[in-house]
Image (cartoon, rainbow, N blue to C red; front, side, top):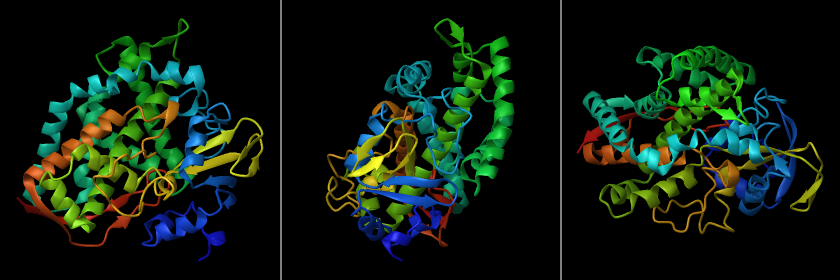
Length: 390
């Protein structure tokens, strides 16, 4: 396979053992125009500096045309949800949500998240053998459902719909998943407008911008985005991080023994895995990028995994260094669209690791992992493991 025949939108590509070498070869051309099966021509950016430029220059490269490949053109949420807005509109939609995910807001959840992670790991240890991916799923799901005030009886439905909406193989299947989730969220929004509670749904349902209350559609679209992102991103980052440590047992040992700071190690695992493989932007005006002329309306995909493995920024980028510092990775975004849930994601990941270190001596794979078929959140569908009690 040569650089000219590599299809970056093929999920199987990112599971290859030689992915680092392939991306290094591609990166020799800073910005390249590529044809994709579902999205037509797209400019691909694989270097860190140019990628960060695209993601921080929201005047030139906008979000309203879509933030992800494979989701179809002209997204329904354009201008209505945080992920698909820029400038003042983006800040207005972000404002009511921010307190729930701020460091202060997350600190109030720390004990709850720690207890939840301990219980989840204890249950898995009691089983002996388990699927690592399913083992980790309850932590972010329950936390997000708590924040949104989702009734306990509805939570299995919510996680199943989230899987379909984010990880199904085709755009049609993913849209079908969102179409199942949206009526449920609509019902919840209408209930909170009639009887508000102390939860994120109620807060968004009552939020006003310029004296006008957000429409039900705007509330539902933002909740859909928050819920799916909050559940799936943490789930796949945790699973891919643990799969990485299984393949680097000396790193697991150092981290478990406290030889490496957990916060520093989490940043390296976020960089190394970069499960959110790409972010899409659309050029608002004619511009130049990496020696190429980008016309207004052209779509530009920043391949985050590639940017986070750029040797121009990261020394020996394909090597796992848990004490790497500084570590200016893009795994949680950059600029105005920096992940609003980053503090909560870090808290959940930290709780999972601390629970594992307290209860588990080692994790032994009992079968090969099954990678998912997504370039949105690239991760594992299944990883059977045996947990050895500490």
